[in-house]
Image (cartoon, rainbow, N blue to C red; front, side):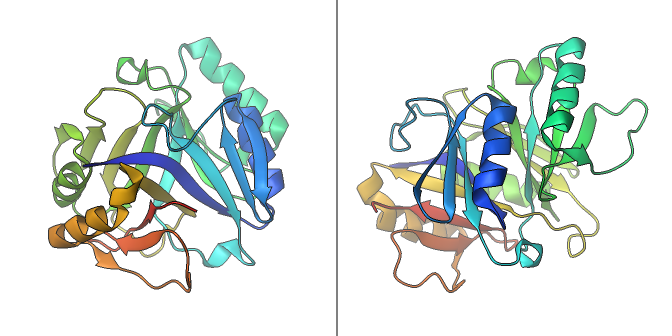
Length: 246
């Protein structure tokens, strides 16, 4: 039994517009099987495939500004030229600077057309084989505690951990990193993204939910009603979902 990070769930007022932005940003395609939900993934993507890449699911909500999540995306680049070209292309697609450019910073902080913050990273060896999404970064109070919970919960390998940062990755050494960063002002720096996980095999959803609860996760009621996914929160209150069969 294992858990896999299958997608980053991103909230927006207009899911189709934001979905098109991210599809063009990542070189993927946007599709919608139901009103209010746009999937952004490579051609041929099957979310139940254990080898599938981590993708993006854009979900429409009436007021995205009220969403209180703490995760954001960081995009990989392969060279200084690629980094500059990507920032320029994203700007043409509608991205805007989210904070002033800082000399010597390894990242450019941008926001998508609805204000969802993300970063474009300068090239780094550690991210050379992640694909277009280098990392999913989560603001937290205690990176060491988060590394323990998520490392055991997902069976991911911890590559770095100290009081400021924890860096985890799937044991098979593929896909983006999961990074927990100590953030002094957690209640004032909100994002609109959370993690969606899936059990392997998928029918072990209930077993995995029970196991995560023994590690310190708690069930969350966000008004989801009768749905095929379970909403949980980790020991610091970061919400995430365990997907099931639709």
